[in-house]
Image (tube, rainbow, N blue to C red; front, side, top):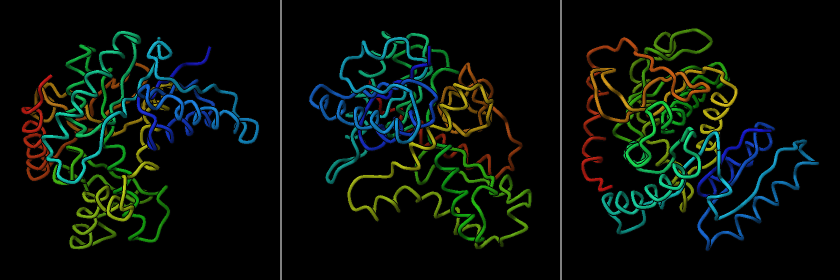
Length: 311
């Protein structure tokens, strides 16, 4: 029997995740959305399924609004939530999405008590906190996607600046999944093994850091409506693949810190070994005083947001 991955929220990001998953022949997929969107969700699933003979996959994908269909999922991705709209404060967004994610987390805990949960909903680090608190799952089984995407954007901008293949670029972004909370690490970034600091001067690196921090905002402004979903979905698939195949890849993810980096009782993006048990190990990098100060500043921003959460 193939493993099952359920995606809660079948919008552009959730549906793209489902498509990427089934085309990899990795697992069976359940896309779930609210009852009012059940038919469109079923339509998307059927459309994907009919691509099987053409693309070459035999995995199963269904659309539903019934959490019973998600029972015994190995991994559940929570993408449900609303984007910030004109006139809506961050507190409004926080309150609305807290209720949505809380409801999703309760259902996941009921129907898939042994699942690993990957949270995608925003504000990310606060929503991972909500999911952990509601489910009571151990910290290795509640993970937030943020650093994987932020690091991919950082690597992309480095490749664009240097005119090289993005495949040869390695780089890490830690901290919170917000413009002001991201902490790109030039010292831990390289191109085909060559340190980034040997290839670019500090001024050009500073510009790349700024663009990486505003990477999501840049796309939102260009789209005019909605937000990114191609790269975000790919980031989640990278995490799912590492877990399902027990690859032990080191992927920056939002996890509960309990003393690492001098931080405790907070979800924040750090390098994590992702394997069959979820977030199996946190990698503690040797940060400079300035890098550590940036990370702690990011933690303060997350703590301020979490302090307003009412679960």
